[in-house]
Length: 346
Image 1 (tube, rainbow, N blue to C red):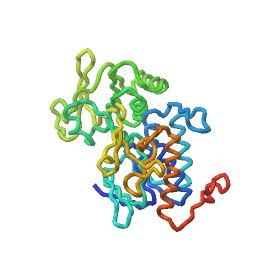
Image 2: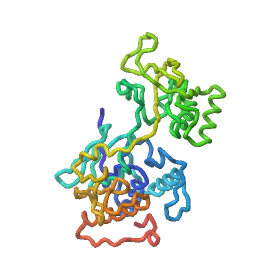
Image 3: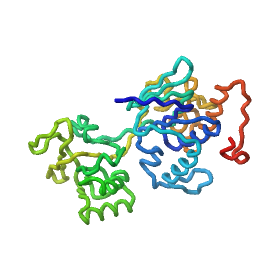
């Protein structure tokens, strides 16, 4: 694996709402940000799990869809040109002799910066994997839990598992890219947006995709009916219906999209104070037990914590100003209101 080296001012782990707002607030301080997130697109669970869910507690918005909130935060951050490492998990954190930090990701990306902001929501969202004995053998060899690049599936035979928004949305997208798409869901009732369900059912009715309900993928294998396939590369799946009948399918890719499970992940081993499966912070600064490392949003824990997006916004703004004073103790920092200076004048 070829590593990539990136240098920035603020390393943000987590590209959900609080991570994206941190970009804006850091930009006002003339700091550049690089964000790391295991998910393939910015937005955290707002974008990946419930983009169509209305949110009612964002000031100034009586109601805003989660996906629209992310679009607005991306637009707000855009003037400050943030960079991203998406589809990568932050694996290690090191404090260097000069006081700066180095974060290495699961794909070998090395990011250095003067401060670190943990904005990972409830933690690292890991895919819920099906209980298939040998599925780990084919991970990244035909089994993927997140669609990072739709082009990977061009002219391929794809089986998608699941009945939620991600499964239906990717079924619709890949219908025009893959040579064959089969959606497998364990019931006839879907948990996705009605519009997505209707589109997928229409594609199935016209024969563009195949939809199998009341069943699930029960096994995966690297050979199909004795064909000469590399046993290390996925070549087929077995589908078992609820009535016990089975069907074998030759496939190039199996993409089980059963949702995401939040876990603290590698952060738990970074030497930070941990409480209630979250990172303990000083409630007056939101600094962790490591000087220069902050936690904001749902991943931060302190007395009377409210796990609201608006709370995370406040935490990010205050923590950045604390960090600015830490890095520049000789300067008397005066908050400049954007209502007076605008964005370009900061």
